[in-house]
Length: 141
Image (cartoon, rainbow, N blue to C red; front, side):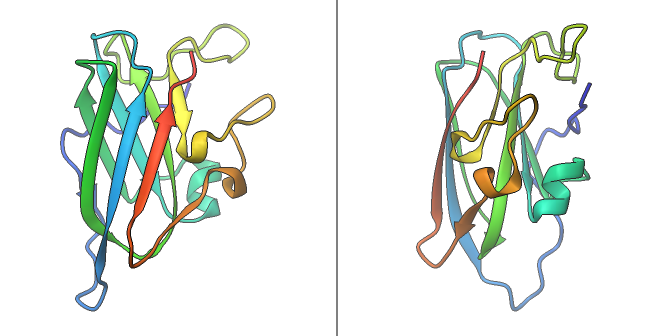
């Protein structure tokens, strides 16, 4: 099982003074249960996405409606991907059945999906530029 960090605020690796922060708006929809938390991990680069190393930013929001949304200005321009899970039972893990198929809702930036596992970086990556970025993620159930 993949365990997302249990953080209760946005945590970002310190940015250099010369890095200009851009706006990222994220909307996560199809949140069917109002229990537990929606856990979000933002990664920069294919390596961080593939091996699930420490994300550059994490956020945990309570599941209190059909949609969970947030905006951050803490990321500089660049390429990123987002992993999302709805930890319905509050155990801090993405629960899965005996063959490894998730039993809790999950999603990725660009609504990317993979065959027999998570999507590839190329499918989930998006760019934050001078105009910022918007990501709308629908949870898979």
